[in-house]
Structure formats: structure tokens, C-alpha cells
Amino acid sequence: PRHPNGRKVRIDALPEHVAFRDGGCALAPSCLRCPLERCRYDEPGGARRLFQRPRDEAVRRRRGEGADIDALSAEFGLSRRSVFRILARGRQRIANG
Image 1 (cartoon, rainbow, N blue to C red):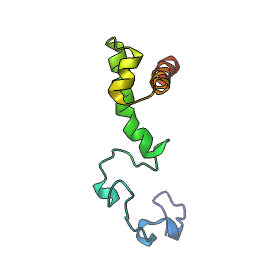
Image 2: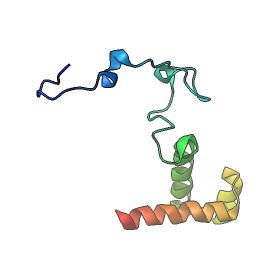
Image 3: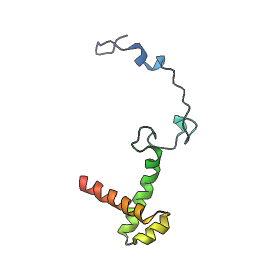
Image 4: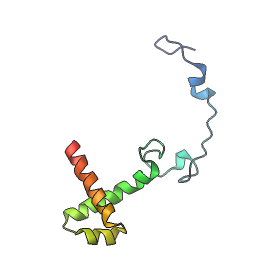
């Protein structure tokens, strides 16, 4: 087979020749029924990062509202060190644009 641009197409590159079984993962029974906006395997850091992102944003928002480190630690069930890491990642993102 040939691509519309005239180049040859590998036979195994065509979707009709791929035996794909949508077995899902630990988070969903199939890819088509997955609640995530991006596949856990496509996201750097995997599923953990996808689930931590909203929590981390909430920690930074609460800090911006004036919550102290101990309050954030108790509210989110994190160690003080984890709170500091989350805040540092937020500052690093801002600095990197």
C-alpha cells in the first residue's frame, strides 16, 4: 500500500493489521471508559502525577490565601516536607514560564 503522498506504508503500521486488545489498566476496565483526560502511560509520572496535580494546585491556592505550613499539612494529610516540595515545584514552574 501507498500513502497519499506516494510513499510506501509498512503493512504492520496500518490499524487494521494491529491486534489491539483494549484491556484497560488498574484505573479503568478499558481505555474508552477511562476517566482520565490523558492516558496514565502517556503522562510523565503516570497516574500518581495525574491525581496529585489537583491536590498540589489546591495546596498552592490555600497557601496563597494565607494558610500556614502546619495547617496545610493537616488539611491535606501531608508531611511538612511534602508541602514545602509542592510549593517549591509551583515556584519553579512560575520561574520557568
